[in-house]
Image (cartoon, rainbow, N blue to C red; front, top):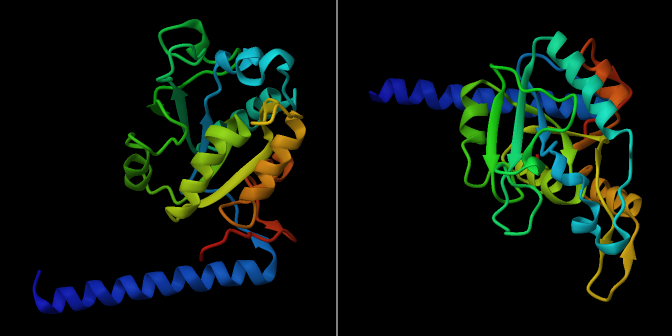
Length: 237
C-alpha cells in the first residue's frame, strides 16, 4: 500500500472509531438500545444434558435455580430464527475425567427441544470460555457480528467467563438473565450458597462492566424494534 492509501485507510479507521464512540455515547445518554439486526448473534452456552447432574456441580445438596431457563431459551431461539439472525453454540467437552459434560457420553448431548441447524456456528470447548482455544472470535468477526446475546449454563461459570471475554474483546454484549441458570456452590469453608444467590451475584458482577443484562421479554422486543428507556451500560468504552 502506498503512502496515500495508508493515510486514507488510517483516516477512515479514525472516522469509523469516532463514529462508533459517538453512537455509543448517544445511546447511553438517550436510554436507547438499538434493535438486534444482522450484526447480532445469539450464543447458547453448554445447553447440554450433563448440567442436570446436580450432585456433581452442587454436591449432596445439589440444586439449581430458574427452572424456566430452558423454556425461555427455546422461545427466544425460535424468535431469533424467525428473524433470520445468526445463532452460535458452545458445546463443552470437559478435560476432567469425572465430568458429566463430555461429548463422548450422553451428558454431552443437547437438552430436549434444542436443535442445531446446518448454518449455525458450533464451537467445541474444553475450558470455561467459549473463546479460549477455539475459533469463535474469528468466525464472528468474519461474519460481521458485533453484538452477542448470551444465554445458557452455568451463569457463574462458562456464561460468566465468556461474557467477560466478549466484553473485553469489544463485542456489544448482552446477558439474558432469565435464560441462564446455575447450581448451588459449596464454599471453601463448607458454606452451601443458594443457587439463586450465586446466579444473582454473577449477573450483578457482569452488568454495567462487561455487558448489559436484560430479561427475555426485552430481548424479544429488540428483535422487532429499538428498546427505549433502557440504558445500554457496558463498561470499558
